[in-house]
Image (tube, rainbow, N blue to C red):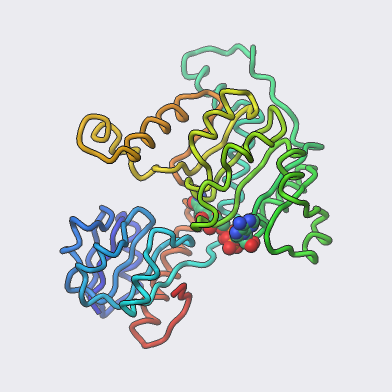
Length: 332
Ligand code: NAD
């Protein structure tokens, strides 16, 4: 089978090549887009990460494509309706260790609660003063967890280790685990109004885009923190900026931001032709990332040694199964 793998590093290509002997593999560091789709025009299968644009237009340039193996849990970058029309099977990595993103969620929370980022920046300048660096304990505080799936549930386990109270909101409640882990489900308003820190673990769907909008951010407890390791589009950027400006939010920890795929192209975006929305995202993200009460990481929640190997191994299994006429981990 001819397989084109996009957004790959040398580690990715070595591991996938070793796991898929007998197949024709090609590796490209860049995302797959409408413009470079020719690179895969003779392929039956492709593997991508989340910055590839699997739109109707890109897919129309891949006439022989039968299978997409995304090296991610989320698949909001793939036009599933178009894949259905064209009978293209789409496989993801449903789970590669819920602990990985949950641990990163606490890296962001602790950076903000103990001013680790500000201390580091001062230390780099030889400044050893502690003025303005007083933090707060997590023990006894209330964590609001929105989305109690695999990652959210692991966040709750860690929070309990810190001695935090946990309030949770999900459209599907796991009453059994709420009893075992000693947390309480509540209505969304109560979670927003009563939590010192709110952390987001819901998928990006059309129904959850801008889930955290002006109204919901306004309802949050004054001086609370908002953490996002899910997808950037879950938060409306202008509403977040306003919440920080008005002091409703004391800070934000963001592993993902809406329009993150354009941050690297920001200069291009500011000076050359680009859509108005893309330019707005670039300006909003520049504003957010320059604030000292916003801790930002460039979508590395998943990026631990152990998780990366599990992602690559599951992707190879998905592609092998497809080549053998079986279907595993299909989202379509
Ligand atoms: P999951 O499917 O196990 O859990 C998602 C939960 O959200 C489910 O319990 C579901 O019922 C709930 N939910 C869905 N819509 C909701 C709504 N409107 N309101 C309330 N609850 C709702 O997913 P997961 O494995 O825990 O991952 C969560 C998200 O984290 C993924 O969708 C992905 O976008 C993101 N993620 C990010 C990284 C990263 O590197 N930062 C890595 C992996 C996953």
